[in-house]
Length: 466
Image (cartoon, rainbow, N blue to C red; front, top):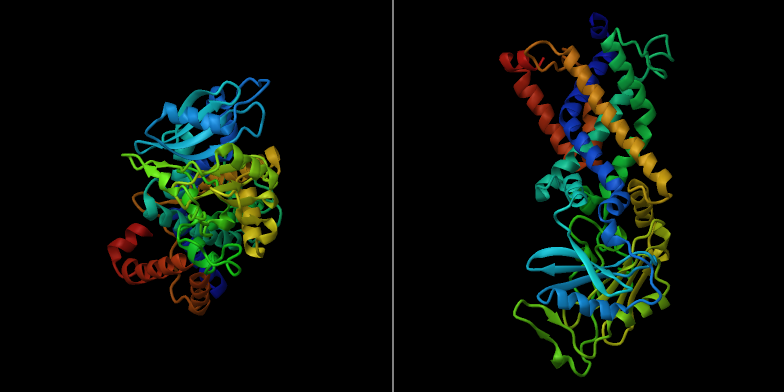
């Protein structure tokens, strides 16, 4: 350790090590949570089929009932419910799905299209996949949870950058402990150090990719930094017809609206048609469409005629001037589609495709598809599984390394070198991080001040931390 005290470069190494430790102390619990919940949601299509197969899959029949007939069946079964969305059985062996709001409970109703029978229901807020999604994005703690996740993810980048600096070989050997771990179980500290260092080096790119492709969903960075004002497609060509955005159509515990159009306002149906006086609301504020409104069967025909891709979802109008919103988020983002259809005339009010996206939304959508393991099927899922396991292994090995080296009764923070001469470098790093990731910049300044003004100035606290 004495050698590390001799040069400014080694002083800087110790400072990086200290902040790598601090970052890990904060980030590791979140990385474990994100990895586990991410793996669960990564295989959502597979687990859904296993857990709810009796509801999702049916025996293929000769003829199918129309969507309008199925909708009436759902309304009869749930007379006090608002029907929000409809997913057709684009695959012959699949059931149709209706999302409803029934007495403040969000339910997914499964209907056999060949028998027009309700197969059952799924509480969209009380299932494994919903909990995984909510914990992954918000820790089930609302906006505060979103900020904590965002802060941890951004600090994960600090952890990666500092980790690569610490990994960089400074001895004669560029193989053992650098590119190949020394798996010597007799020397447990060396074993875990090499495992952590080498796996971190090989996994740094895929982990960084996971972090960057997860940032578009964040509350602060995603909405305030990544998105520009009026960032939705067609923003400069059409005056928004309402202040209600596409994002409101996303269900609890999932996303059915493409990220690129979440901020796009919903269009409005032309409400000057004769017969709108027939619109009414029930005692539970359930919207009842006018006889002039097109039924669900006709809307699906219009959607198919406009080349909507498989697995499109139709959101039903909830007001007299509401529209049918058709969205598709297939595995290939290039096939994403958003249609707004007038509920009376069937006119296409909005039609957004991949060609309408700018460079940034295209890049983000491609990253999301890869992040979710959708773009190239099972191989994509396995690649993201590998990335999640790398994060878990780094978190576990880093924790074990800390536990093995920490002095009894102390936190074991790497010591800050005295007379550290490279504060200009540190200042530049803080400024850059503050510009790129404001939450990290603010927290970094706070931590530096706390470290320098409190930990370093209070002998008892310095003794415990060191």
